[in-house]
Length: 345
Image 1 (cartoon, rainbow, N blue to C red):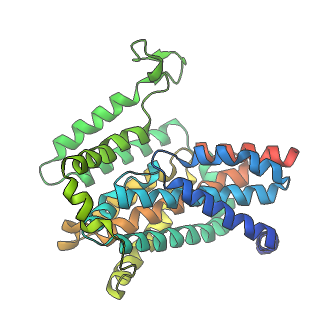
Image 2 (image 1 turned 90 degrees about the vertical axis):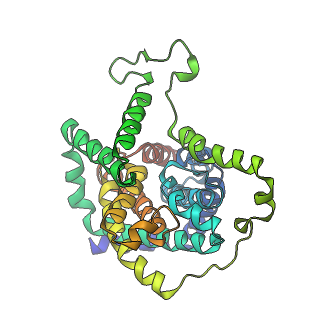
């Protein structure tokens, strides 16, 4: 294993490949800031560029950088505009945007950057250590295991419900499941609950629903209250640093969610979205007293948890891809196809 790691580092630290890392992260971050564009769309845009490189290693490095940059860039719009750039950063808006409303947008962006970097770095270390063993675990997941995983994910919704609000959370869960049935049937590929409308053929997009729930109400609020848009404290970004006490409170959160997010990312089909929601739910449940009450109002832990988990999950999704050639998510499926095309080209 050590020999393989050294070979990989030798290939990655060449000047050209390092330039591909910087270019990929920059492009992914800039485009990921635009609400509604996920990593799949960004990587699809970059496919011609990657194929034109001709080197499969450089192409994979470039697209991986775009992948990580898009996940991180989505947190910027979540924090500043309450408009999640990608599905995996929806949970980041729960506490990131309230911090921005309090005039702590700079601190929120710094926390997101540090948590994302730490989650991705720890995930990469875990990838090198556990990839061969975890590849067999990914193959053990079948219908029953996926069903259990989805039940756990849906059960985490209770963490977002306040005292006495479990019934409302259950109703919203059922509504979400009903919306998820619209589109093409998984077994028959026939239209289901589309009422003859072609626009519903592919179902409701998660990011579209997220934009409608978060960005649209905020836009209407700004239209109805133009004074806040002009003079609000969230309009100026300053104070990029966070205190040592906040750093000490974030450290165990980053450690826990790096490991949890990585192992969730290893499971095919789980992805960064489930990892971020579960990470937020776990940290909210284990918080005590005043810290738990702070969640949803600008909690440092509430922002660090999903940002760490989604980046670690992105790294974990490479385990079945690199070891077995089985993409763990839609984004890694595009990466696999582009890598094959660049290699054959």
